[in-house]
Amino acid sequence: PDEEARGERLRQAYDDACRGVPDDALLRCVRESLPSLVQQWELRRALTAQLGLHALLSYTLQLKALQPGSVVFSRATGAVHLACAADLTAAGAAAEKPLPFRLTRNLQRLATPFGVDGAFSATFSAAAECFASPRKCPLELWLATLAQPEEDGATGAPLPFSPPWGAAPAEAASRMHALSPAELVKKMGKQADVHANLRALVAEATSEEALTRQPPAWQAWL
Image 1 (cartoon, one colour):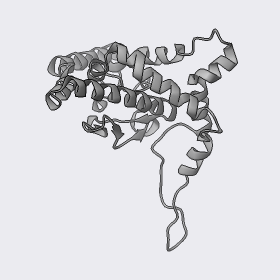
Image 2 (tube, one colour):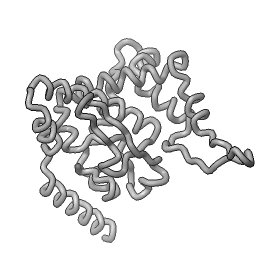
Image 3 (cartoon, helix red, strand yellow):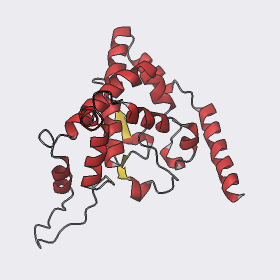
Image 4 (cartoon, helix red, strand yellow):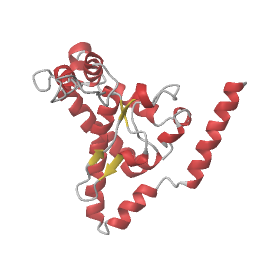
C-alpha cells in the first residue's frame, strides 16, 4: 500500500508538471530565436545528432545531468554541452531504475520521430562503433587514465577526486560493444538487427512509467 501511494503521488507530480510545461517549449524557443526555416531545420538537425552522442555517453559511462541547467544548447552551432554531470551511484540513487539517457517530452518534440530514427540513431551507432574499436579509441585505457587523481604539488599526496561517471572502464567498453553495429554483425551475422538494442533503450527512455519514478530534481518530464 505504501508503495502504491508513493507511485500515485509521483504520477500526480508528473501529470501536474506536464500540464504546467508544454511539450513544445523548447521548440518554440528555437523558432523564436531563428526566423528562417532553413536555420531552424539545420539547428534541429545538429541538436538531434548531438543528443545522440550525449545519449550514448550517458548510457555507457553512466553520466547523468540531474538538473535542467546541466545541459546547455548552443543556438549558434547546435552543440549540446554537458555543463555539470554526476555519476548515477552518487546522485541518482533515488530512482528505482535509472533511465538510460534523457529523451524527454520537449526533446522528443524538438527532434521529431524522424530525427530520433535518423540523425539521433545514426550518430549514436556511429559513435558506439568508434568507441568499441580499441584501435580507434582505447576507451578502457582512457577512462582509467582520466580517473587518476592529481597530486598535491607540495606533499605529493593524491588530491580528492571522483570521476563524473559511474561505470567501470570494462563495463563501459562492454556496453559500447553491445551497441556497435560492426560488433553485432561479427557476433550474430549479417542478418543481425543492429539497432534493436538502441530501439529498446529509446523505448525505455521515453516510457512515462519510468519517467515518473525518477528523482523529482532531475525534472524528467521536461
